[in-house]
Image (cartoon, rainbow over all chains, first blue to last red; front, side):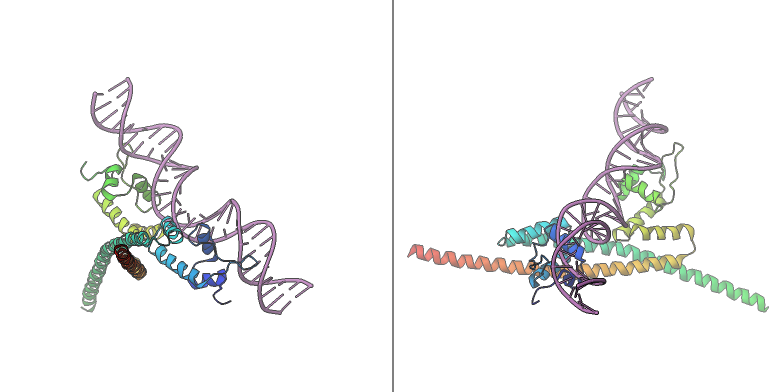
Length: 140
Length: 140
DNA sequence: GCTTGACTTAGAGTGCGCTCTAACTTTTAA
DNA sequence: TTAAAAGTTAGAGCGCACTCTAAGTCAAGC
């Protein structure tokens, strides 16, 4: 049991589903996982570290295709550090652009929220004035 | 021609495809566009402003379903400003979280890039040392 | 008048990233 | 010992957001 997790445990640890873990292995994002005598997968600590890094790439929007390329480099080109760094740096740029895009569009949404807030206070003031004058009429 | 753009012109102006423009109208993101006598769509300036705002929502990851809700509020509840503001504020929060997520995961990728860079300089130094000693051997 | 290109519709197809199913075997707890 | 839970595979299905097709109508230039 030392260092040998079941697929279920890995799913809990990484937040991926067991389905997704098998899917990632099937499409070569994860290299074939060591099996118990009965054929069940047994994940090592380094398998988990790899899966965790994969999910970082995924969550920053890297497509499966690119992750496959990266995984291929890691597996078949263990000395090809510069290539891997270049891939990550290209991805880094695209994430930075993604963030800038989000911030720019968020600014416009913020502007709209402000606009709505202004409309609301305007409307509230209008109503208050109406009520006041209505009150006066009533009391007179 | 004043204020009356064809679907092609709107596609160019907004960056959406003509297909997507029709699709958005079909699923009620855009209310029915005014037609020329022949049945062709003629977009007004305010149609375009609406489409541009829609794309901001879209580019910040709002799902079509939510945009449909928002569009419905705008069309059928013109005085329901608070509801609209609430929707936008909820979305605003999710965009902010999205950005934080991206930044956190980017930091890990950055760390990996640094790690690779370090490996590369290490390797380069190693090679240089080897070459030097090799040179010495050769020259001696 | 005729061709070329833009427009229309309903509905089918695509690519992505999972997600689930069926049929079966293995492990585990009662 | 046996029932339930968890594992296996190949392959089908799904939801999303488009994207394209077919069959036809309309408009502009020669």
